[in-house]
Length: 230
Image (cartoon, rainbow, N blue to C red; front, side):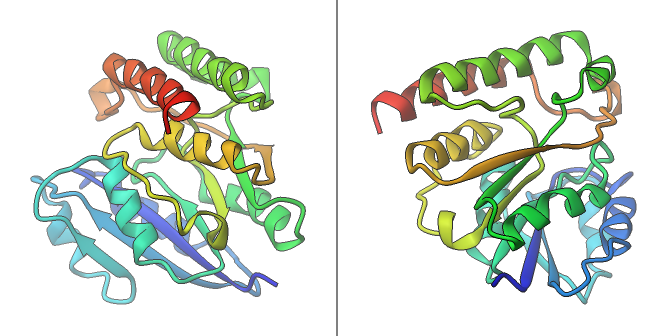
Protein backbone atom coordinates (compact mmCIF):
# COMPACT_ATOMS: atom_id res chain seq x y z
CA UNK A 1 0.00 0.00 0.00
CA UNK A 2 1.28 3.49 -0.87
CA UNK A 3 2.49 5.37 2.21
CA UNK A 4 4.93 7.98 0.89
CA UNK A 5 4.73 10.98 -1.43
CA UNK A 6 7.29 13.11 -3.24
CA UNK A 7 6.14 16.49 -4.56
CA UNK A 8 8.32 17.70 -7.44
CA UNK A 9 8.45 21.46 -8.01
CA UNK A 10 10.33 22.59 -11.15
CA UNK A 11 11.40 26.24 -10.78
CA UNK A 12 12.75 28.89 -13.14
CA UNK A 13 12.74 32.59 -12.24
CA UNK A 14 9.86 32.40 -9.77
CA UNK A 15 11.12 34.73 -7.03
CA UNK A 16 7.69 36.33 -6.68
CA UNK A 17 5.74 33.11 -6.12
CA UNK A 18 8.00 30.27 -4.97
CA UNK A 19 7.74 31.00 -1.23
CA UNK A 20 3.96 31.18 -1.41
CA UNK A 21 3.79 27.94 -3.40
CA UNK A 22 6.00 26.07 -0.92
CA UNK A 23 3.96 27.43 1.99
CA UNK A 24 0.72 26.28 0.39
CA UNK A 25 2.15 22.80 -0.21
CA UNK A 26 3.33 22.61 3.40
CA UNK A 27 -0.16 23.50 4.62
CA UNK A 28 -1.78 20.45 2.98
CA UNK A 29 -2.79 17.74 5.45
CA UNK A 30 -1.45 14.52 3.92
CA UNK A 31 -2.58 12.43 6.92
CA UNK A 32 -0.77 9.09 6.80
CA UNK A 33 1.52 9.87 3.85
CA UNK A 34 5.20 10.50 4.57
CA UNK A 35 5.79 13.56 2.41
CA UNK A 36 8.90 15.16 0.92
CA UNK A 37 9.22 18.23 -1.30
CA UNK A 38 11.78 18.09 -4.12
CA UNK A 39 12.54 21.49 -5.66
CA UNK A 40 14.52 21.63 -8.91
CA UNK A 41 15.87 25.06 -9.82
CA UNK A 42 16.53 25.17 -13.56
CA UNK A 43 19.37 27.74 -13.37
CA UNK A 44 17.25 30.73 -12.40
CA UNK A 45 18.83 34.12 -13.02
CA UNK A 46 16.64 36.15 -10.65
CA UNK A 47 16.63 35.83 -6.83
CA UNK A 48 15.06 32.35 -6.78
CA UNK A 49 18.30 30.53 -5.89
CA UNK A 50 18.93 32.73 -2.86
CA UNK A 51 15.36 32.19 -1.67
CA UNK A 52 15.66 28.41 -1.98
CA UNK A 53 18.81 28.28 0.17
CA UNK A 54 16.72 28.70 3.31
CA UNK A 55 14.71 25.51 2.71
CA UNK A 56 17.06 23.13 4.48
CA UNK A 57 14.26 20.69 5.28
CA UNK A 58 13.46 20.06 1.59
CA UNK A 59 15.57 18.50 -1.15
CA UNK A 60 16.71 21.32 -3.46
CA UNK A 61 18.49 20.46 -6.71
CA UNK A 62 20.25 23.09 -8.80
CA UNK A 63 20.82 22.80 -12.54
CA UNK A 64 24.03 24.44 -13.71
CA UNK A 65 22.39 25.65 -16.93
CA UNK A 66 18.81 26.24 -17.98
CA UNK A 67 17.32 23.22 -19.78
CA UNK A 68 13.55 23.55 -19.48
CA UNK A 69 10.65 22.35 -17.34
CA UNK A 70 10.81 18.78 -18.63
CA UNK A 71 14.46 18.43 -17.66
CA UNK A 72 13.69 19.79 -14.19
CA UNK A 73 10.83 17.33 -13.69
CA UNK A 74 13.02 14.44 -14.87
CA UNK A 75 15.70 15.45 -12.33
CA UNK A 76 13.02 15.35 -9.66
CA UNK A 77 11.84 11.90 -10.75
CA UNK A 78 15.41 10.56 -10.73
CA UNK A 79 15.86 11.76 -7.16
CA UNK A 80 12.48 10.49 -5.95
CA UNK A 81 12.05 7.48 -3.70
CA UNK A 82 8.40 7.70 -2.66
CA UNK A 83 5.52 5.44 -3.68
CA UNK A 84 3.63 8.35 -5.28
CA UNK A 85 4.86 11.39 -7.20
CA UNK A 86 3.02 14.66 -7.82
CA UNK A 87 4.15 17.56 -10.00
CA UNK A 88 3.59 21.11 -8.75
CA UNK A 89 4.30 24.25 -10.81
CA UNK A 90 6.12 27.06 -9.03
CA UNK A 91 3.52 29.68 -9.91
CA UNK A 92 0.11 30.15 -8.28
CA UNK A 93 -2.09 28.68 -11.02
CA UNK A 94 -2.86 25.47 -9.13
CA UNK A 95 -4.14 24.87 -5.59
CA UNK A 96 -2.15 22.23 -3.65
CA UNK A 97 -5.30 21.37 -1.68
CA UNK A 98 -6.43 19.63 -4.87
CA UNK A 99 -3.84 16.90 -4.22
CA UNK A 100 -6.47 15.50 -1.88
CA UNK A 101 -8.66 14.82 -4.92
CA UNK A 102 -5.92 13.03 -6.87
CA UNK A 103 -4.16 10.95 -4.24
CA UNK A 104 -7.04 8.77 -2.91
CA UNK A 105 -7.52 7.12 -6.31
CA UNK A 106 -3.94 5.85 -6.19
CA UNK A 107 -3.92 5.03 -2.48
CA UNK A 108 -7.14 3.00 -2.90
CA UNK A 109 -5.81 1.24 -6.03
CA UNK A 110 -8.43 2.77 -8.31
CA UNK A 111 -5.79 4.14 -10.65
CA UNK A 112 -2.03 4.17 -11.17
CA UNK A 113 -1.96 7.67 -12.64
CA UNK A 114 -4.36 10.55 -11.94
CA UNK A 115 -4.61 13.80 -13.91
CA UNK A 116 -6.14 16.90 -12.38
CA UNK A 117 -8.36 18.25 -15.15
CA UNK A 118 -8.97 21.97 -15.55
CA UNK A 119 -11.47 21.24 -18.31
CA UNK A 120 -13.93 18.77 -16.76
CA UNK A 121 -16.06 21.66 -15.58
CA UNK A 122 -17.13 24.06 -18.36
CA UNK A 123 -17.25 26.89 -15.83
CA UNK A 124 -13.48 26.59 -15.63
CA UNK A 125 -13.20 27.40 -19.35
CA UNK A 126 -13.88 31.04 -18.49
CA UNK A 127 -10.59 31.22 -16.59
CA UNK A 128 -8.45 30.41 -19.62
CA UNK A 129 -6.96 32.83 -22.09
CA UNK A 130 -8.89 32.14 -25.30
CA UNK A 131 -5.95 30.87 -27.37
CA UNK A 132 -4.69 28.80 -24.45
CA UNK A 133 -8.10 27.15 -24.10
CA UNK A 134 -8.23 26.32 -27.82
CA UNK A 135 -4.69 24.91 -27.76
CA UNK A 136 -5.35 22.77 -24.68
CA UNK A 137 -8.59 21.37 -26.07
CA UNK A 138 -7.01 20.65 -29.47
CA UNK A 139 -3.96 18.89 -27.99
CA UNK A 140 -6.18 16.78 -25.76
CA UNK A 141 -8.44 15.94 -28.71
CA UNK A 142 -5.39 14.92 -30.76
CA UNK A 143 -4.16 12.75 -27.90
CA UNK A 144 -7.48 10.96 -27.72
CA UNK A 145 -7.56 10.36 -31.48
CA UNK A 146 -4.00 9.04 -31.64
CA UNK A 147 -4.05 6.90 -28.50
CA UNK A 148 -7.71 5.92 -28.16
CA UNK A 149 -7.98 7.63 -24.79
CA UNK A 150 -10.75 9.69 -23.23
CA UNK A 151 -8.88 12.50 -21.50
CA UNK A 152 -10.18 16.03 -21.02
CA UNK A 153 -6.90 17.79 -20.11
CA UNK A 154 -3.67 16.23 -21.32
CA UNK A 155 -1.60 19.36 -20.71
CA UNK A 156 -2.44 19.78 -17.03
CA UNK A 157 0.47 20.22 -14.65
CA UNK A 158 -1.25 18.26 -11.90
CA UNK A 159 -0.33 14.67 -12.55
CA UNK A 160 0.02 12.07 -9.80
CA UNK A 161 1.87 8.83 -10.52
CA UNK A 162 2.54 5.56 -8.81
CA UNK A 163 6.32 5.79 -9.09
CA UNK A 164 6.84 2.14 -10.01
CA UNK A 165 4.77 2.70 -13.16
CA UNK A 166 6.97 5.44 -14.61
CA UNK A 167 10.41 5.09 -12.98
CA UNK A 168 11.80 3.14 -15.95
CA UNK A 169 10.51 5.55 -18.61
CA UNK A 170 13.31 7.11 -20.62
CA UNK A 171 11.92 10.66 -20.69
CA UNK A 172 13.71 12.69 -23.36
CA UNK A 173 11.67 15.88 -23.00
CA UNK A 174 13.55 18.98 -21.92
CA UNK A 175 10.87 21.64 -22.10
CA UNK A 176 7.05 21.68 -22.15
CA UNK A 177 7.03 18.54 -24.32
CA UNK A 178 7.17 16.61 -21.04
CA UNK A 179 3.36 16.57 -20.83
CA UNK A 180 2.68 14.91 -24.23
CA UNK A 181 5.66 12.55 -23.86
CA UNK A 182 4.74 11.21 -20.42
CA UNK A 183 1.08 10.94 -21.47
CA UNK A 184 2.01 9.07 -24.65
CA UNK A 185 4.10 6.55 -22.72
CA UNK A 186 1.44 6.05 -20.05
CA UNK A 187 -1.23 5.38 -22.67
CA UNK A 188 0.97 3.13 -24.84
CA UNK A 189 1.84 1.06 -21.77
CA UNK A 190 -1.86 0.66 -20.88
CA UNK A 191 -1.33 2.10 -17.41
CA UNK A 192 -4.57 2.70 -15.54
CA UNK A 193 -5.27 6.43 -15.68
CA UNK A 194 -8.08 8.54 -14.21
CA UNK A 195 -9.04 12.22 -14.09
CA UNK A 196 -10.54 14.41 -11.39
CA UNK A 197 -11.65 18.07 -11.69
CA UNK A 198 -9.39 20.69 -10.12
CA UNK A 199 -9.42 24.47 -9.74
CA UNK A 200 -7.32 26.73 -11.95
CA UNK A 201 -6.20 30.35 -11.69
CA UNK A 202 -4.09 31.07 -14.80
CA UNK A 203 -1.60 33.87 -14.87
CA UNK A 204 -1.03 36.13 -17.86
CA UNK A 205 2.11 36.41 -19.97
CA UNK A 206 2.78 39.76 -18.32
CA UNK A 207 2.89 37.89 -14.99
CA UNK A 208 5.50 35.41 -16.19
CA UNK A 209 3.55 32.68 -18.00
CA UNK A 210 6.13 30.80 -20.05
CA UNK A 211 4.21 28.54 -22.47
CA UNK A 212 4.29 29.93 -26.03
CA UNK A 213 2.65 29.03 -29.36
CA UNK A 214 5.77 27.14 -30.48
CA UNK A 215 5.31 24.81 -27.50
CA UNK A 216 1.92 23.72 -28.90
CA UNK A 217 3.59 22.87 -32.22
CA UNK A 218 6.25 20.90 -30.39
CA UNK A 219 3.54 19.06 -28.46
CA UNK A 220 1.85 18.03 -31.74
CA UNK A 221 5.15 16.67 -33.06
CA UNK A 222 5.76 14.82 -29.78
CA UNK A 223 2.34 13.15 -29.83
CA UNK A 224 2.85 11.89 -33.37
CA UNK A 225 6.43 10.84 -32.77
CA UNK A 226 5.69 8.65 -29.75
CA UNK A 227 2.59 7.19 -31.38
CA UNK A 228 4.30 6.02 -34.57
CA UNK A 229 8.08 6.12 -34.23
CA UNK A 230 9.05 5.18 -30.68
